[in-house]
Length: 69
Image 1 (cartoon, rainbow, N blue to C red):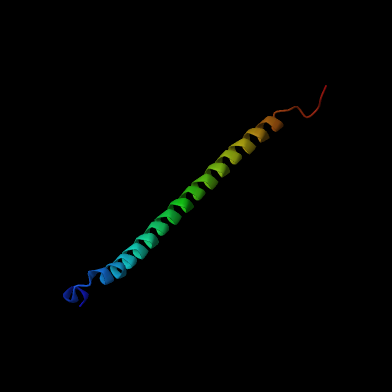
Image 2 (cartoon, rainbow, N blue to C red):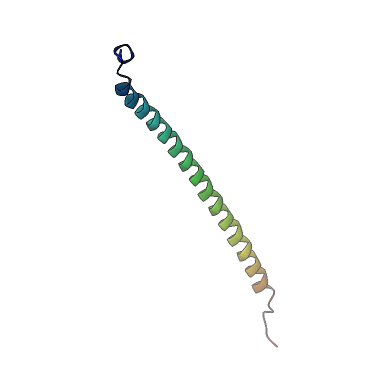
């Protein structure tokens, strides 16, 4: 109806706002998924590193003699 009247300037913000809202929701959802993936991989790395460190410490401590002469 707006096109037939010739007032395209009224129609443009309505279409643009819907497009930009959809784009922002999709962009934010991708950003949040990417951040959760990064956080999960950091936590896994920390767990693996701390686990390997604790294993190294436990082997060093168990290699000491029980009785000092």
